[in-house]
Image: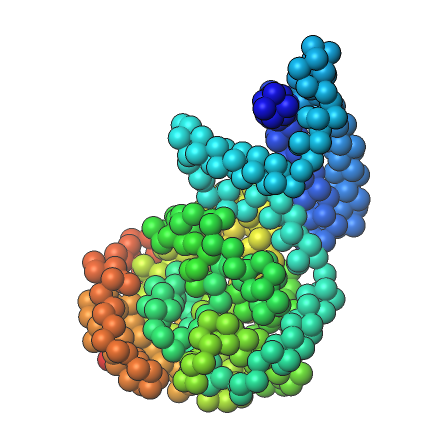
Length: 483
């Protein structure tokens, strides 16, 4: 019994040593240095000279961090050994007795479980320990993210391995043709995605698929089943939409960038043309969609993959040939409201990406290049990005007109649905859309997915003639909407 009490004092001493010396903060700093070094090496947005400087700085920080961790850990070991040594000197319990007890497997398991439970109990009751949005990606998670997106070769190799595992373990035939939701960002695509997500025949990417997007089947077994690491929180857009690991998200742009890298330039993203078809790449995308269906809707023969990808607005004329039988849904929002929202988010992400470089790196890796320091407009035929500063409202209205002129040219391939209809008549509009898509509804109510107030149109922000052109285009497209 005395040996047991001494062992508990040793564990307590070790814990106090770790706490008082700040070893957790030192470990976090060490991992952060690793993240900065790895991120710098694989950041496509920096020059070789900038990478060299960043890696040297990170290497110095790593050496400093190792020393900081080493002396703190050593002091903690001294704090743990003191009760054992004193008990031995006093003749209460020998060192061999105490160490023999502490090295037993049942003792290690029991003490570890008790420590975890106590730590969780205390942390939940301490003020200031509420989870923040940044905790969704810890320093360790950031390091794994940087490695997962380190090189195209690694991502393609993981995809190939994932394909082999999928073919070996899954004997079902390919899924039905996919559904694509696309528009300019801030057009209502996320609300529409959430409405479809709860339907039993729809399969989508989820946040739990990060960071190994190209290997969803393997990641679902090795790490994607985690459920308590991320609390539900508002997403970075600040628009009131909350997310967690089970929330749907747009990740297939990762694959488009991986297999069509020549389309992505420093200043813009090219439109896809029929001559750009890459059949092996299309096959990889189809297999990827099949894997998501198998993961999310196992055994559902009517299930369809749903892609919400704003960049697909650059591919309207090729999606039907790349994915025969697919459906394309284009949400339509009034131009003044839409352009004003684009401007707000551009300014929002300019600040976010300036404050935290990982936000910039994350958005770059997943191909969300709509806003902020990463902003790369799609090279629509009638749009000149150099004409106006993106911080000006008319820039985004010009962009809206160019984008929806492109939609108008491809309107025979698209199902247009207006945000006004989704707000005013959500059930009627969604039921009409589901009927067109031949999707079973099973009594689902759609009232809660869309804002029930009219969209605000700040016309005063924009040039009157330009706004007149945009509104005329909106009127033409509105006549084609599914109702």
